[in-house]
Image (cartoon, rainbow, N blue to C red; front, side, top):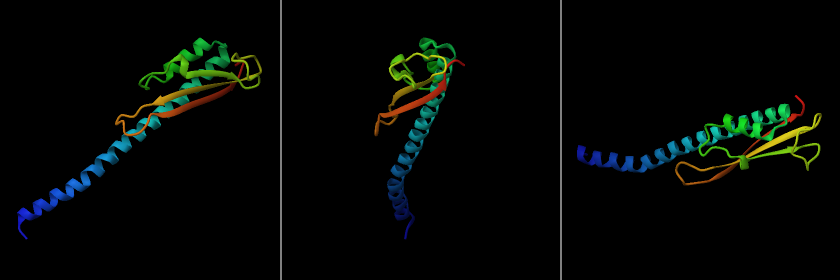
Length: 130
């Protein structure tokens, strides 16, 4: 077998393996981005519910949540963040002794556009009144 025919075999093998390696690399990147987004949502929900439980100020709690999730692109908006009194489901305020929950909804678009967007949520709950 000559060297020329071996070079052709290497090129064919590379043509078969290269797309698989690129897809694996893109999958790792997408998964790590989704994992980071989920961790950011959880931290934002935790911070938002903490501020809400202490101050009973939805605007301050939304700002705290948005400031915690700065790594998300596009960033969080007020529409992504909802509050609910667990003990009185019709209320969104934080009465002393009640439990408040915050839910942050987010649609994560993918870098490659192959899959997605993915709906993600971050939730937090805390006892009101500090």
